[in-house]
Image 1 (cartoon, rainbow, N blue to C red):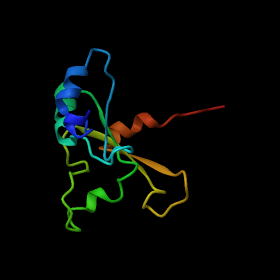
Image 2: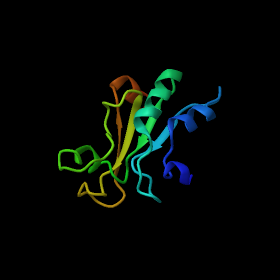
Image 3: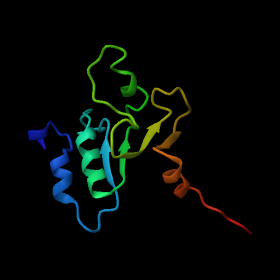
Length: 121
């Protein structure tokens, strides 16, 4: 909402967690407003509750991690944020790849192993 600058906050996430919460998703940045959610706060909440936290960095994933190096003041967007377990990045947005390509990054191999399937015919 307007009071948070259209950012998802850690307190808003905490209030909505139930026994059915399977994952918490934050944006860096959100598409409609171009703002980053409170990733550090949300990551802490996710870790405290033992819930995976995914960051949708499809729009800014190739730019935001290097913004500070380039002299811009931007929120941190990387796996150094405690509690973040996965991120998605669109390689066709600033990654110089073909339209429609994306990647999902995982904090570690243990999490990534759940993406694979085995099919034997």
